[in-house]
Image (cartoon, rainbow, N blue to C red; front, top):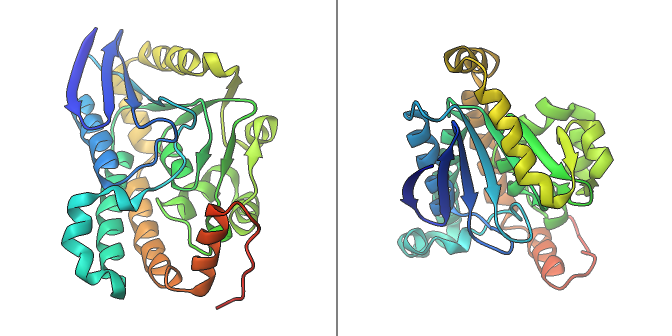
Length: 271
């Protein structure tokens, strides 16, 4: 077994041509710029390693990833504190984060996501970086942005419709509905359903199967079928950020965030 890093809040190990990148921010694994940058750095390093032919992206704790925690980026928060009232601080933080997210889509090695727990909001965006998703039946995926009075990010406005079709993506975006188990499998949100204790093992088995194919051929095929994907995600995040910036200032966003924190139904006014 080989090890890489260290990287902040993730562990990376390599065994039998399969690297396992594990997010270590339990229980919910909220992400910020630092975490996405660390994952992107690990993917870049694994791209350079001939001993790595496939990557498993996994997480510790209750959720795979419950979304973004923009407040966790202390250095950037302090730098942009004076601009927060105008929204420029949010724009700068999120823009940096999305730049790192696009790096994930530029990775050359196949990625299997081990979604052992919920993938919510931007956490679903992170799961869609992968070529495949192995999940368990009772955990859910959700784009909860409209229930927060907010706008999707992490390139989801491109990656989700491309994966499941425009109509199903619209349903998820407009309602914030949680999609679970067999429905997620039927829609193509996940590729395999197993028991929760088998998610990581099954994801690694799939990655080993991929690693058993000719690595140069796999990378060439992947590059062909994903040609232009990173650029499309970049264009999506550029637009998403503009919409997020003005929506964050609305009364509905304040209400949606408060209602979520208070575990009640929001009362939106369209303002």
